[in-house]
Amino acid sequence: MDFIEYLKFCAFVASALSVGFLMGLFIILKYMTTPFPRILRHKEEEYFTDVATGEKHKFPSIDEEPSVELSVVVPAYNEEDRLGKMLDECLEYLLKKKKENSEFSFEIIIVSDGSRDKTVEVAEKYSRKHGSGLIRVLPLVQNRGKGGAVRLGVQSCRGQYILFVDADGATHFPDFQKLEVSVKKLVTGHEENGVVIGSRAHLEQEAIATRSAFRTFLMYGFHSLVWVFGVRGIKDTQCGFKLFTRSAARILFRLMHVERWAFDVELLFLAQALKVKIDEIAVNWTEIEGSKVTPVFSWLQMGKDLLLIWFRYATNIWKISTSPPKDHSE
Image 1: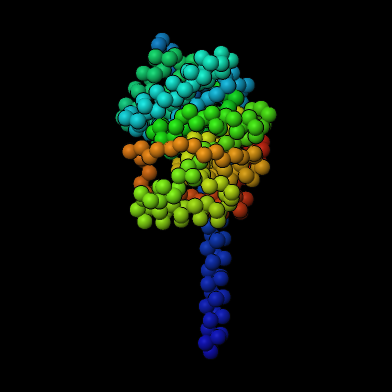
Image 2 (image 1 turned 60 degrees about the vertical axis):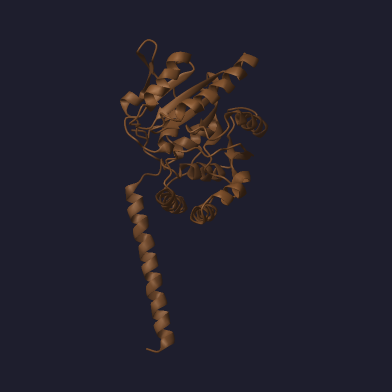
């Protein structure tokens, strides 16, 4: 066998191994997952407590008609130190907005994602002060990830429009007004599908100046993976400040499989695949100490999730539909 034939043989073996690997991966993933996500919700997670009376009431469903204008969903994991400041800023803005416009109505749902500190107690203090009509607490039995916490909060809300916001208070909450203006230009009402996302892209150069070269490398690597695996035209997929119409939230969160850090990317991938109207709005953002993101591990986890998201949708293992089944929850 001469050298050229040897190279051809190596190329053939490499191709065969690659095809075999992809076929094996397809078979494994096909039988490890379902076309639509199985959404775990424990019985006790279906109820919230009226802290003032101690009575338990069943959360409403995203499938019901909305009864308030805005729902704010706050996922929180061990956030006893940062949650109060965020809620103070949020409530100051929303209560002022309600005072200026008596027709405006809102609720805040704080989802404790299996917290082991006093996150629930902090949240309940605010619920006791403002009433369960305004603030409800959803303590999850076990930690399932930020995406899973946001999903259960969204599925329990009453709003025409649904904003999810990080518990750390990094995003200036009054910037909600920018998202509100945008979504009402984007769609004519909550029955249409629309998403407006807060963006920190305008702060990127400033962040690079203060960030280590390694973290900057990880950031650009993640952005490249997001682009390669299907989310195009969006500069910041990860900002924890996103506004959905009720219709869009109902569809997207019912389709979403990923419950940890990369869930934002899957949501936006689904939104683009379904031709949902999307706008990206610059918001004021400040880095807050106490981040739960571990640079190397979290980025590797997200990179793996991005690859698997792309592969599962590309091979039709995961399905995309504007009418996902309602009976796939557990």
